[in-house]
Length: 73
Image (cartoon, rainbow, N blue to C red; front, side):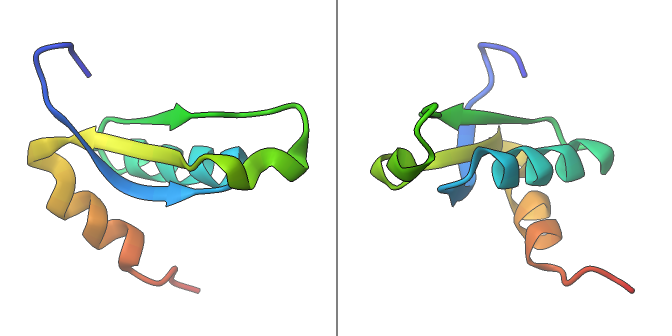
């Protein structure tokens, strides 16, 4: 992602691990994704601020579709 691109939040989580997994899945599918937000060394404080997965504005619809598609077994 470059500074000139506009970012859009595609999902929010209370767990950094979950946000990292979703961002990795998006990147594996060719969508640049980044994780933004607060991560505390005190897990009980995770509720205080959402951890967001952001993508480029033009990738938003495709990213949302991937996130909402159930995993195939």
